[in-house]
Length: 282
Ligand SMILES: Nc1ncnc2c1ncn2[C@@H]1O[C@H](COP(=O)(O)OP(=O)(O)OP(=O)(O)O)[C@@H](O)[C@H]1O
Ligand SMILES: [Mg+2]
Image (tube, protein in one colour):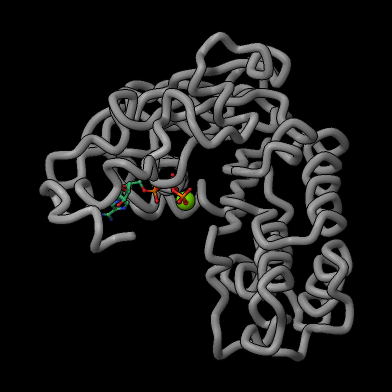
């Protein structure tokens, strides 16, 4: 396989995923080049995590193609998929830590799973990754004993445990304070800019998105559900003509995605029938 810088690390073509007759992904195509930080954005429930789950091979599409490092993964044998999965790290939206294990054991998990290193080397690697995310000294605590933001950082340390060439993060900064958000952003930037790691980051955090992103895609909602409605560099997205994109990046409550709390018809919509008496509600 060629290491040509122009060959995409990820190539998604015409991806469709149908859940019970509803197309949550409906013809999604994009490429991610080496060293890029691709931001995936879009409203809650628009399919971002579902898209990520397909790219990491944990879900199979209804149709379409996904190539990682030039190899088609949708039809791949599980043992080949495992070989590809070893080359990337994933930070899940929920953190997905093992509750019965300590912080240190959680970070060690992928190292123990994929290598036969001596325990003191594993220990050293765990300490290095925890130091990177500012959690030195927390290795003996259980997930239940640390804060939500700390769990996120443990998840990141675990995703980085095997020095991946590709990093997937689902909402890596949700629940973090602004300083920790910068720390996580800087870590991602250092990996992509200094080490040539490629990152795919799902985020609602527009400060973070514009700070770290080199390319961006936005998934639509409503009639555009499952489709990419905008793609480009951060500058192109910032000045994008699509009003749904503008509403999203500026965080405006009403726009093409309608504000659903207009007082006049609120109760009618909830009950699915005309309001019985306006007096009863005043
Ligand atoms: N396994 C599944 N079975 C059926 N429907 C699913 C499944 N997984 C996701 N969905 C549906 O797909 C849609 C997209 O979900 P997804 O979790 O990808 O959204 P999201 O964009 O990540 O949202 P958020 O920003 O809130 O995390 C939702 O309507 C969800 O109910
Ligand atoms: Mg999600």
